[in-house]
Image 1 (cartoon, rainbow, N blue to C red):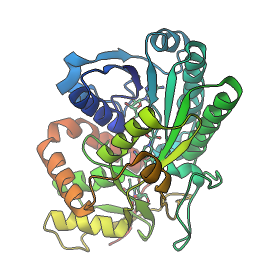
Image 2 (cartoon, protein in one colour):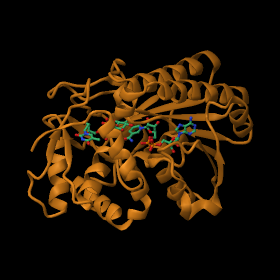
Image 3 (cartoon, rainbow, N blue to C red):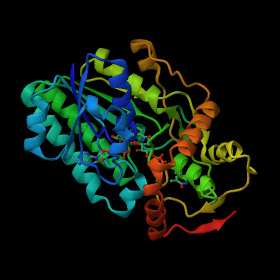
Image 4 (cartoon, rainbow, N blue to C red):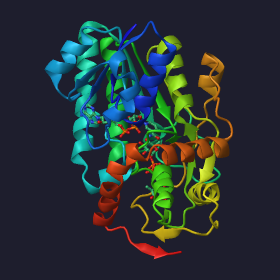
Length: 335
Ligand code: NAD
Ligand code: DAU
């Protein structure tokens, strides 16, 4: 299979490309990535001589047309992905997540190329603590500019599939963790703070709940959907990993041998979603997927080791990420 992977220099895309190259020698991979602040070619260093890397923008219609004309399938990861950035400056989210997806859809439509759209559980909004988990039938109700643009892109895919007969599938996954995640995100931020002798920073009271899944389990599900998913179908991806943020911070502190209260409460995120939770019954029953990483503490410990062992990968980004939080007005509220 000739595969075009957009956003292959980002967190999830790079893990996807590395495993695809290692496990599927019959697949040829072309990566299209704009190398924004979130893209890092070093994440692909080990496979650099086994892929084609194209530095470019998914919203470049001519470039996308040319690349899509030469492949059998597209897996679309590229996005502006961070909620806090979307609150500070929404425009790049509209441009990349909506216009960029439009550009890909027009090309796969023209060449009848198989398309898989990688999306997020955040399109469904948030849940009260005791509400049932999201399913494929949950109504769209996004809260942030990030999740609204991801929801918009999902709706474009659905409309293009119905109106133009695209051979498309969608997946909406919960919060990923693992190696190569940008230090702006929750878990890598706290790990690298601790490596630097700084304290973890918890938004508000820290009682928001996220449904954690290891990035490799997400990517195995993407392959299952790409190969065996039904056209037009959405599959939710999650590993029953619900934890509140304070618990996760305490687990990271424990991995560093620190006291469980050794963190700071900081300014909360405006519009902060309360809880995400995924019901992955369809994926499990129809496609036979199950997570390999069932022990979050073990997966987290491996992730801590990875950041300890790979400081050269994240160090160039750490000061900039912290400056962005300071510039956005993040204040320490107390310990
Ligand atoms: P990321 O921010 O780490 O990586 C995004 C990548 O896209 C970067 O390499 C960046 O350079 C590239 N990119 C951005 N704009 C581009 C453009 N206009 N043209 C080409 N490339 C561009 O993101 P991630 O966490 O790896 O997320 C990947 C996808 O998975 C996104 O679509 C996101 O919405 C979705 N998702 C993420 C999570 C999560 O927990 N991180 C969960 C569910 C779904
Ligand atoms: O649910 C899937 C989504 O998960 C993806 O679509 C997004 O791309 C991805 O970024 C992630 O979104 P979140 O907003 O949930 O992830 P983030 O890592 O930014 O924050 C996780 C939780 O931790 C959230 O409740 C906010 C909180 N947080 C975050 C940071 C950066 C803190 O308490 N302190 C922090 O320093």
